[in-house]
Image (cartoon, rainbow, N blue to C red; front, side, top):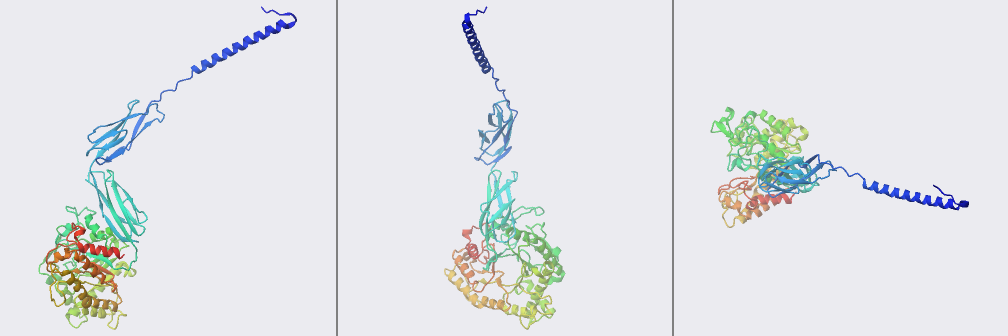
Length: 606
């Protein structure tokens, strides 16, 4: 019941009381509502793991090496993304927090990541092995401008993963991609090939300026059938039908410092029985044994045996070696080969030799040398065909020059006239009686009236030499008269050897310089070195020969010699002969003073 007071006062008080009570009720109700809303907020739902993956999925390690694995749990907002790691064989590899440590060779084994939520698993297959990378070659030396060269890398044992990664520590000099080295600038760079087991091997690249006028150092290579033979150059037990890189890495490394050509006189059977292109050594022939070649009836009288064992090297392998090392090729066209042989050889070199490399072309080897079968052959040809000359020796020399000019023309027909003197270097080599060579050039290459007009009769194709080459050897005696044998065991051998160099320069080399100047043709050495026949092994191993060789090389500088092709890179050392810069591919550089002298001179005259 509601009571009203007089004159409205009671009514007013009554209304205020009711409003206060109503406000209190609202406030109480609101607080109760807030409290109820806070206590009823929904709890987030649990997100379960759906999968886990491990990266990388495979891993190769060497013992004691480590690698970090990563486990990726999905979905990314999983409530519990934790994993535990385990190894299926801790004796081979262990794991802690995803870090794998290789213990011992073995595997593959599983490194497993297991999720705490749901037990989901993922594996990385781990193999542990002791590997090695064999890079070939381990050194390259080229002038700037050479085309890129491909390196080969093999992981051993061959049952292991063969993939490698490549890197260069100096891309401003040389870059590498998939093993192909591109020469960018002068200097040195180290190319590294690293396998998946973290083993590596390197190739040291030296790039020298292009167009250097300094005398270049080249080399000759001994026959596969002499001394250590093939064992100095190629690996054993090769299948010649399938092999793509037969070369010993150490051999390729020894070749790297030389800036001159590789002369293949001994590898090409320059004075052997080859007549027809089909007679030659084929790329797939067994180079360990060589092959028997019947002596052609047309040349049988120049050989005592009706058959010969061809221990030469296939031209394809010579070309491969030049391409692989970036060296120019010097080919000796066999003494008795026919014209088709010349053409086929020129085509092969034109098609297969890196076009940034030059090909030096020389007919046979030392046709003037009375100890070789080709000597009598050239005499017979010169006399029978009435070549100019006062006697058979001069006529033989004239025919040899004429045959050389015809070989040059065969190469020009394949390479083109523009290549002659640039990509194809025509070589006329002489020694012995220099006057025979001089008269042959004058009367066969030229018309006998000077050195301007080519002979219309003997040289209608206007061929010429781009290089005249001699073979300066020192020893076995003090002088041409043979007075005083140079003995490698003589305590004074260093003094006497240097004196012999001086004597030869005055009485022999200076005459060659005059002839080269007469025909305005560069002069070089197709062969050269020491030629002792008594204790040659001792002198070749004597540290003093280093200075003697440096002195020898310095003698060529005033005469503007363009190259010196040492004979030879390797040969066995005996008292009677020790031609090689090294006695074998296994001879350490510190035990090879001749080799060090050649390399040091080459490195300081780029």
